[in-house]
Length: 470
Image 1 (cartoon, rainbow, N blue to C red):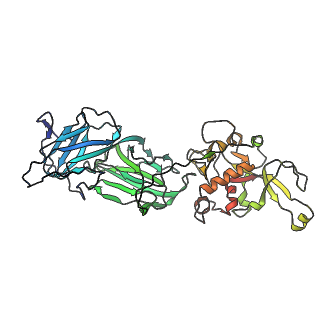
Image 2 (cartoon, rainbow, N blue to C red):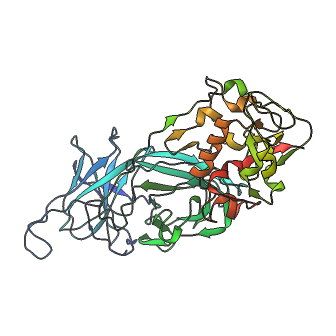
Image 3 (cartoon, helix red, strand yellow):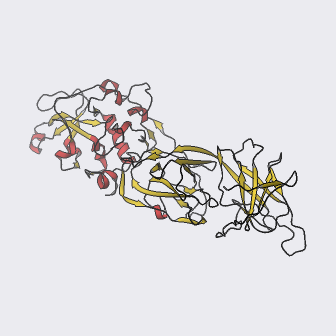
């Protein structure tokens, strides 16, 4: 924000010598709600013959220790600027103002932010409350990643996020499926223009569709000739169906670094007529029970995805759990794993035949499969993978963080990142596939957007990452 020459006229008030610059007229600049100012009857106004009362600024939101240099600033349409320090009660007060003013702060500590574009005062609305947010800093990344990786901000009414870009080539990905996204680039400075693009994809696998993108409209009430701020609902309206977002920014002067501050708050739109804050679900932790079946198996041959032998259809009739203590028609003994399976014919079944079990079925866990493609190639171990769903949490069952006991399946994967499929591993894979809607009436990630475009019935989705050695 531009600095003005300040002359001290009294202990209580600082005046800035008026220059030739004027504040650009904006749409709906007058205070219109409790989120921008607190209105009170003034008892008089321009032309009333009464003296206009004090103008005040009070800080709300996150509490912090105010530095002595922190001041409130009122800037008139003619460029005249007034400043006042905050007293022990946290209120900045000035008098002698007459007209309409934009209200901002000077020397706010760097770890706190506010929206500099929405606070205004006039003779009928003299008391303003400015909401302060704590800020979380991120650094933009250069170039376009092969897939979205980045920050996972939480919806909050007290936290803002700041991304600092060193060039126009840098960008920052983030994931969010709901909430109101709003940028706070200063329209007074009018130097930073944020750019937001939303993409469809799967937030758990990290896969995204670069051909399905959208950009929201800027908010005219907080925009200027160059700076255009956003205030939009994620995954709604212009961004319907989008869950990945990439943010970058350009500079009118061409100078860098520049920063973009944005917030994510509860979506108060919709037709429900009320606001329901998000409810954090609870999940029951699921731990591995069949630990005696956890072992590193590396059969000869190469790993082959099961669905290539069934026309990319996940056909559960072609595999079966070979229970321990049983044998098949060729005398093979059950080991507790799923196997390729050849069922007996009707005539053979009448003769008491049970079929023949073939190669052991494996699931790729610690390396990428053809549905989950990640930056580091670690498959289910990728940091963005979430194993919570349907009231259960399989995180420690498979392993997503620091090693914990009891042991988990990732510890026993072979050189291909694969482990034999047990009954409980099948349940975990099925819960993941259903919870992440890999198959969703033709619109799921595995069937509509992945490179292999699989097909599956409801009960066979767990086979999406399974194969055998041949």
